[in-house]
Image (tube, rainbow over all chains, first blue to last red; front, side, top):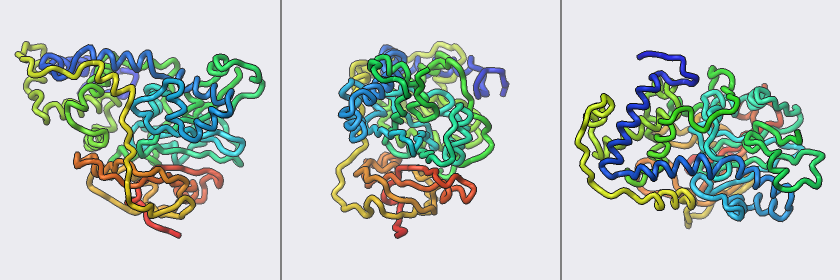
Amino acid sequence: MPHDSHDHDHTDPPSDLTLRVKALETVLTRKGYVAPEAIDAVIDTFENKVGPRNGAKVVAKAWSDPDFKQRLLDDASAACAELGFAGQQGEQLKAVENTEDVHNMVVCTLCSCYPWPVLGLPPSWYKSHAYRSRSVIEPRAVLEEFGVSIPEEKEVRVWDSTAELRYLVLPTRPDGTDGLSEDALADLVSRDSMIGTGVASAG
Amino acid sequence: MTNSVHDMGGMHGFGSIPLEDNEPLFHAAWEARVLGMMMTSMGLFGVTLDNVRSRMEHIPPTTYLKVGYYDKWLITLEELAVEKNLLSKDELAALAEGKEVPLPKTMEPIPTEGIIGFMATGATSARRIETKAQFQVGDTVRAKNLNVDGHTRLPRYVRGHVGTIIADCGGQVYPEVSARLEGDGPERLYTIQFTARELWGAEANAKDTVCIDLWEPYLESAS
């Protein structure tokens, strides 16, 4: 089987995969099993409707509104639905809050479970064998590769998404952000800070 | 195939985290089509998420480690489409070679609104169960040493280890049953917190913990 220099771990040349996918889609759509525009609409959902911008709005609101934050920690799916973020892979969301004593970080060691409505599709590294294998046994070494150092005396708490609960890290609000609007705060919330491999930063 | 390579927690040798600046949502157009086909055809195939996961876990370990993420989805879709008699391997092979194949329309697809509506509402795995909880928050429990030759969500790295229940998550679809397409078989789910030292030994940081969601049949009392 030929190997090429494609930038991730495929062994087949992309053209073979493209042909296989096209063949499958042709059969499924021409026979009437699947509507091609439904496939387009699914892709559009992930490209334009769900993504980490949604999660950032949730975090910014939690930072700004203590009542909302409490609702988020009590029932994250209901709280996110208040902002219009709900759906598949977000039916049972759980928000875990970073504190002075605890840094949270999320992984799915068995596959790549991820909270779609608030974060969209996972980045490649989240799905990588390296992240899936190492996050539970050496989370601090993994965090260092993201440029995150957690003091020895602070707990790193790793959440392995083995069931249908989907975890969202509520990062710590950066210092010096008093008075910022929710929109301005949302700009400080990175995707990685909501997975726990980053921290929210005032810049 | 419980004990296969998809159960990666704690393995060594996969190297550094492959970070990519300004990563695109898809690395090739075909990946998006595969995602779209999976989301639009699971209902058609009559399979559950656990069944799909189980199929991916049954990809031979050498292949599993070699191919990319969406390749595994494609392998699973091809397998399902053939198994459910939606198409033949011959049709797929002929099309992939660029040949013309007659493909008469056999049904009307699920309307796009139905697919997108389902994505927007989702379908919870929470289930009401009447049985009394066997464990309470604060209880010390041991993850059983189960080596089931089928789908499970009990990773090897917690088996035999002792942790503390930190949440009772109520009844949930049980993956072992759901993967076999034998209904929901709901069981109570708990979140268990293990210390890093319990899982990985004395060298691990004394403060660190791993929290993991485990179903009641995976657990036994260790109080």
